[in-house]
Length: 152
Image 1 (cartoon, rainbow, N blue to C red):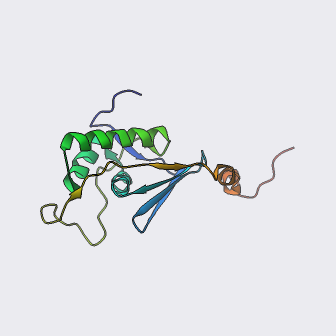
Image 2 (image 1 turned 90 degrees about the horizontal axis):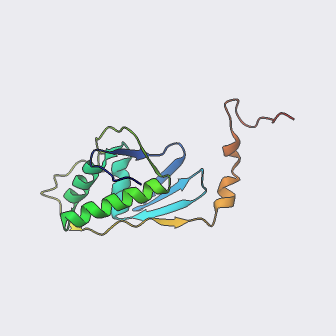
Image 3 (image 1 turned 60 degrees about the vertical axis):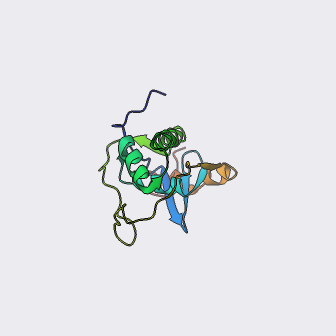
């Protein structure tokens, strides 16, 4: 893969990839591969920032604003995580708004918020349900609707 630039924009690969955050954990499903993933802590924050689309530079800055730690280590971890999400097909290059989502409870100035220690994000990958997820009849829907009979 070529070198990632701070100006490269990425977004979640919808509708192929769906995700939901519940109780601080984000679960991501790639409907093409049948793999599903789990994220916590920093990974959840990064995916939230990627929902509207974001550049690598914006991600690094916003994650750095939220956590305390060495700026170089934060940048390296965010870039490596984005590369991993790209390799798994969770992200795709593409335009975005560059506007981060509004946090629940309203925006809080970073200066008044207590920063937690940065921990590199971890993408936990599971493939144990691939066959079941790929058998989902929804995958067989075409423009005519479902169910549709296949020509003989």
